[in-house]
Image (cartoon, rainbow, N blue to C red; front, side, top):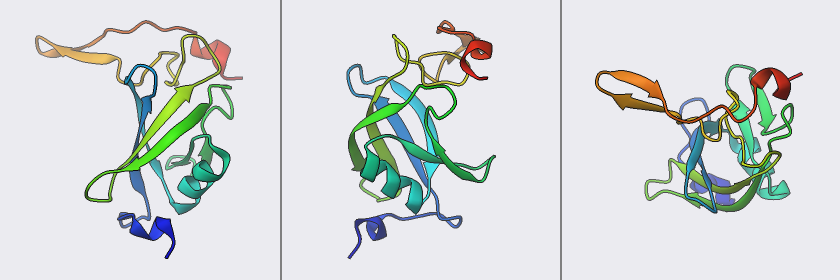
Length: 129
């Protein structure tokens, strides 16, 4: 039996994935993987996701250089969510978000509105060419 068969894939053949920084525990991002993306991630030791907007595999950092070295791959108790423990590479401190921030979860709910609470570490215009 293939280890990928244990995963409960959704109707589109995808599973939600959370990338968490190994050293800090910070939740960096949420994305999707299909079987090929998860298999490739396990094979090369770097995060490869499924881009729903581009309809193709997306090797994290392929444009920005901000790759994610995978330390461990975990599956939740319902077998329908994957947790990657990663080392965010390519910039110090690590940039996981396309906005140039450390984490995609930089907006905090405060008094009835969303407030950006984390700084832009690098202007996205200088990240993506």
